[in-house]
Amino acid sequence: MDDEDRTMSLTTREWHFMQRPVGLPGPETFKLVERDLPPLQEGQCLVKNLVLSVDPYMRPRMDAGPSYVPPFELGEALTGSAVGEVVETRSDVPLGSWLVHQAGWREHAVVDAGAARVVDKGRYPSSHYLGVLGGPAFAAYVGLFHIADFRRGDSVFVSGAAGAVGSMVGQFALLAGAKRVVGSAGSSEKVRYLVDELGYDAAFDYKTGPVLEQLRGAFPEGLDVYFDNVGSDHLAAAIDVLNDFGRAAICGTISTYNAVEPHAVPVDAVKVVTKRLRLQGFIAFDHEDLRKDFDSEVGAWLEAGRLMSPETISRGIESVPAAFTGMLTGTNTGKAIVRLAEDQT
Image 1 (cartoon, rainbow, N blue to C red):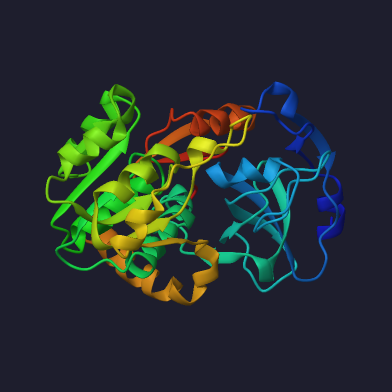
Image 2: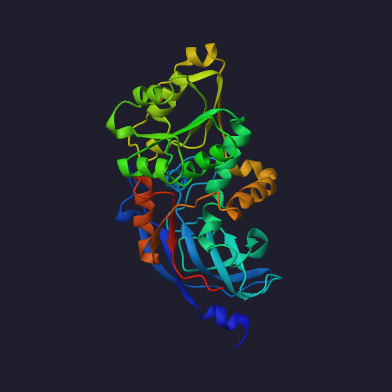
């Protein structure tokens, strides 16, 4: 049986986008669909997905309207980062290779080899390429070192510090010589994890009191860098506590992603001016020129055992929607991963 016949006979399951949600996505948002895969064309691979990523940026893509990436289309399969093992190939990518690609939310995918990235098979768990060596850590690296212009001796505040990006930011800052690193999180368990496991100097539960009061207490001498994953009251508080010439890298505003009504951030523009603050939003994929530096520096920290890779793992294709909404509501610590198959190395 040739490659075309074998591919045509294969069916897979994938999650389709059925209804634009109002607020938090519900069961009506998704439908698990079984379909036949097309035959491979020249330059393509068939991959069996090992791990899938669910990420905050996927929620804004479920709304209609312009953004930095197109919205998901109703009735179509959802997409996102995944690591898959090549089980058929009509490209120069060998059988058995691991590919990082964007055809997530499904068990198998036909992938254009030129649009995917081959990674070292077996050197690390496949899930690392979606977390500590993947998009979240790259966003942390870009935002901290190049948008916020981190300098040795800086005091750093990270919101959403126990999430996929935040858990990397704090570790990077500590490894690079920060004076003090403090994070916010949504539970006492996460607060303890940040301090006891990831090495944060301090952390606080934003649900237990006003963020501004807790942030002032954490930084009596002010802070120099704010890495924002949350927005809202966290951004307003950081502007109040930032020192003169402080810098904020604004990576995400997860506090507003499921908001039903428009949500304005109460920014004190007078303080932004008088303190000469720099607030900059960024999208990590605008900075692919930094990828080699990221791979080298973060890879060295990981190899030396100086970097932890926290993950919350769900299992099976059926678990993807629950993993996604759980991530949006903060049930995960570190990177939210869905594992479909075990690594075979």
